[in-house]
Amino acid sequence: MKPFSYARASVESTAIEAGARPSTRFIAGGTGLVDLLRLGVETPEQLVDVNALPWSQIESTADGLRIGALVRNTDLAYHPMVVSEYPVLSEALLSGASPQIRNMATVGGNLLQRTRCSYFRDVGVAQCNKRAPGSGCAAIAGYTRMHAVLGATDQCIAAHPSDMCVALVALDAHVYTRGSRGTRDIPVGDFHTLPGDHPEVENVLEPGELVTHVVLPRTAFAARSAYVKARDRASYAFALASAAVALDLDGKSIRQARICLGGVGTKPWRSQEAELALTGRPPTREMFDRAAAVALQGARPQGDNAFKIKLAQRVLVRALERAGGRA
Image 1: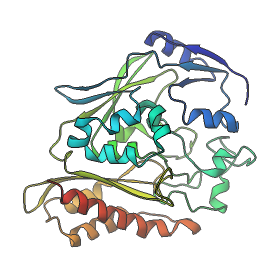
Image 2: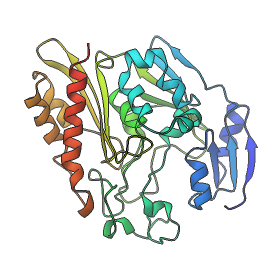
Image 3: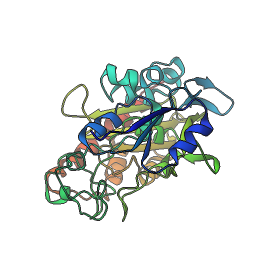
């Protein structure tokens, strides 16, 4: 591990100023960053600890549920309002990691979680455009079982790892940030970026900009929501394919739908085409199958991950059935 300096920030302005310096990283729970430090993937010169900032509360407001960036995943997953009014989020968090990691991991850190691509995490592999821009992508000609089939390019095919973010997209959540240029309100669907020509850029944050909180709006579809995840083992495994869905039903038809896929995209993958395919239709297995086909119609498999297309379709249908059956 490369040596680095360590500082604690007790006020936002201090954290923002320190974070804007070159080769500086923020740390809270550290469940992702510390791994990357040990592997030599992340080599900052300074870590700024933000745990003293006042962002550890979950509050019901007129706008919805306000979740501080330092709220731990366990506290969020078991919060009574999340369990009853936003079940897809609770289910996603509880499927995401071991209890020990959930006890440490934060909402802000989860939003910034980096890919589990084995080529990215192995500094002995020279070709990785995320780690060394312009070097190439070793994964494309390598073992691709865990990689993305949606949003992939010839620059990067790494899958986004988060479960929580998939649920947040399905809930129309908003991410609030604060930086040197003030505050921002970012729809979570716009927070993460596609690889394009710059796979090393994974989100829209500017240097020194901090996530302060997330807001879950009050919607007609949030309570009738579900998360389904397919993985290699029942605990502490990243998704091969997952689906977060939310439905607003009027009894005989679907008024609104939200569909987001995980494990198969280079970012949490919302399918508005599949949502439109369900709108105004009855909540039947036939309609769910049709929407699942639409959601994966643009998939581009890479050898070992072709199975993800059918798997994601089946996971999505299961999630829609679960959400449709909820009172």
